[in-house]
Image (tube, rainbow, N blue to C red; front, side):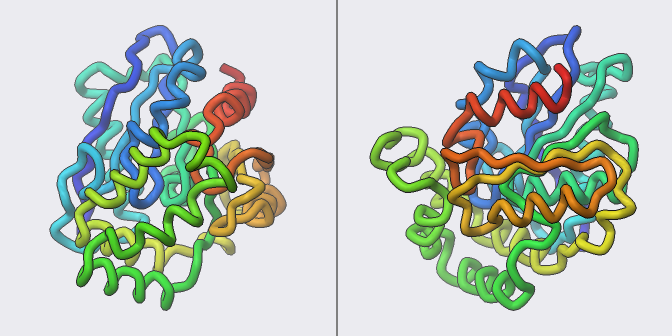
Length: 264
């Protein structure tokens, strides 16, 4: 187990605005996932995204990693951006992530309390799936590659009718999955298999906003409400138009909720 190296992408530079760190969903690159939301967010935040190992701009992982190690990698990336002057202490720092990136929001609140002025957990949960299910998927993808889960992901990721109405963004996201490094994808599955912060929620003091998609079968709205019910400074909301990839499916609605919550 080791802390992986993550490559950030600066989507929008603004030295006078708070910084919003954007986290990915498993199988997606940050640009395809969050790019549609940038026009709605850029007047309110400096935008920095990160990619999972072997996805988007990040190099593949060479060893397995845990969710705690992935959260530590996010903080290491932020520290490096601070040294480079991209992130400054005088501006507030926020975080929003989708699916595994949303689970990392909870891991960050648990492992690095107070590091962020607020965090958003989007289309995610305090526990996702089962260890057995993730182990099975990791083994399958490591052997056969990510195309083997392409059809199932297309069915889970998008609300009914989205692919037909939006062929370009949906195709971009599915190409991300097809191009992802199989072993890095398997490592991320292993990390999710060991992730369960349900009992830790009452101890998380940071402001947390859990956003669900009404059509999400992976992390349904009940998962977001569970976070709101058990973390002391948490609330939940549901976007009626989306399934599992809210920033790409309905970027305007997702951005509006984040702007309101972060008071930006």
